[in-house]
Amino acid sequence: MENDPSTNKKASRPFQEKDLTKGRGAQYNPTNPFLKNEYVVEHLEGLDEPWEQKSTTQFFKEFPKTIVNAIDSPDLGQGYSMNPYQGCEHGCVYCYARNTHAYWGLGAGVDFEQKIIVKENAPQVLRAQLEHPKWVVKPIMLAGNTDCYQPIEAKKKITRRLLEVLLEYRHPVSIITKNALVLRDLDVLSELHRHQLVHVNISVTTLEESLRQKLEPRTSTGAKRLQVVKALSEAGIPVNVMVAPIIPGLNDHEVPAILEAAAAAGALSAAYTIVRLNGAVGETFEDWIHKAYPDRATKVLNQIKACHGGTLNDSQFGRRMAGEGRWAEIIKSLFKVSLHKHFKGRSMPPYDLTAFTPRSGKQLFMF
Image (cartoon, rainbow, N blue to C red):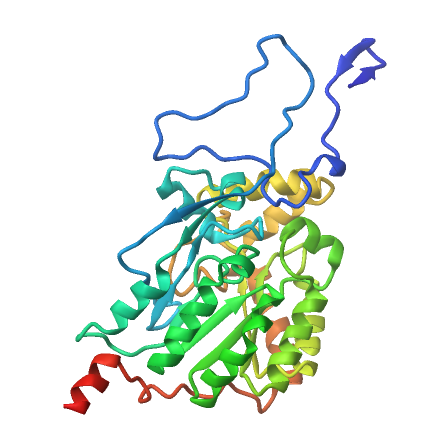
């Protein structure tokens, strides 16, 4: 508390950067719209001390009946998505997947980072789905919602086992991650690549470490991600770099530097999205930026709104990823010029969709 010199009474101390919960992105839990009740913190004695929020991560086992889901978004093309974990300890403040945590009766803020659902039987379920007689071969996006190489994967190895199943069945897969742990599975990825079955997408949001520590606190550093791009590329594995999301007023100025560094590391292509803050993600981000960057919070929020017709969110297919308006056009032009300069003549190779070999098919062939 500080003294107000005009009244000689205690005034509330303004939030300071040191008050940010270390190693976490979200600083609170927005209200879950699906719950009638919610937990609140009350100080019946009128205490002024702030509530000390625990940052311990909890893990919950889940045994789903399906693990691969068809993608029905025109923005993402045709294919499937597969997520071995729900919730993500990486703590990216802007993550659109935060909203899905509400369906589990949890919060989109701190709960999303601290209460992780682990799908223990994912490899077995994947195998069963691939054996379905009506299965249609299309690339599976591994981690289309939450990162499949988040910290718990080092222990659980569910992602690795999923890749091993996909290799066994010769099924195409596309991975997207921000974690250097992907290099642990270089042996499996190399085998998948030998059959033209894998693309790896490395998301590089910022190369400014001070920003990364606040924006996506438990991810690998930007420099480390470029090392991952280099290591994968040297192994011959096709790498696409996602400059995502671009947040006006925070990291938009980094686009040329990120693309130059990604190309130098061997990436074959690059893409971008502009941040959109739907539902509870908007609340989480607004709370965070006023605490992490109070001097530019209003400017950043207004520029994001300028990219989405005056609001923080946008769900319109064909527009939501790239935005609209003057700021969106500036970002698009900056990205296009940098892409042409550093990636001219490069492209990702096609998948081999004919290599798929179900075990049931092998057994029938024997007879």
